[in-house]
Image (cartoon, rainbow, N blue to C red):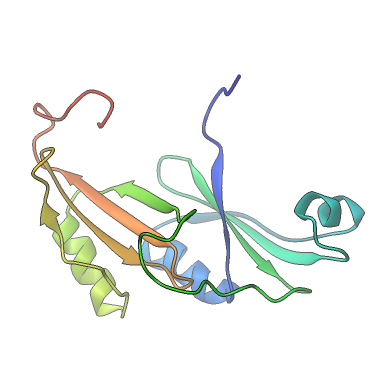
Length: 153
């Protein structure tokens, strides 16, 4: 049934701030930036008379994030920042030098849950941070690809 992974959509409060994070800090490239509106869109998202700015930005591997800022409806703020909120998702990126990523993002005032840590489960270093709208972002550096388990490469 499913043929491939397509994208992840993220509702954001401030499109320019999100573009800065995903494009300037993480290296995505904007594919398209447009206004979505009309009867089709309102029915699709289940919000009457809705209009949103949509930016699709591609990661280096071609997978993209779809950033959505509603222009006609306020976004609903989550009640907390914790990882264990039901329905919470995270985006995971494989990186070459996790310490460099951590330092670069930290110096740009990006909040991390922890610094990079070595996993006792697999030969990786990993850490989590928050994007500007508190979506959790994970970074993973594979430290020994010959030891990593099938399915986790």
